[in-house]
Length: 141
Image (cartoon, rainbow, N blue to C red):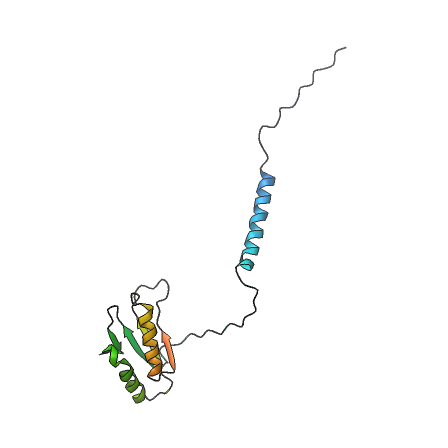
């Protein structure tokens, strides 16, 4: 009696990628969880609170610094060398002693000039100074 011929099953010709995908997804999840922890120092710091000012209620004065060195207090042009005296006079005639001075500088102005204007503003007696910026996405300023 002859034994029946047993046909061997065709060998699998494709690799099962499911375990590889599982391992890759686990690694991605571990990376997403640990990445924020890596980028921050372990040093304990007490961050200052931020405050958003409501410009409509605020008594304020603006200093505008143009790209070519032009300077204006509110809508009045002043010479750069007379800025401290003019600003001091404007602060003295103001009814509010807690006036906010906002520096508006063109994006092309060097940082050195901005620093000098800030120093002059402090020297003139301003107690509260802010630097105006454009919010992201707003191009109409």
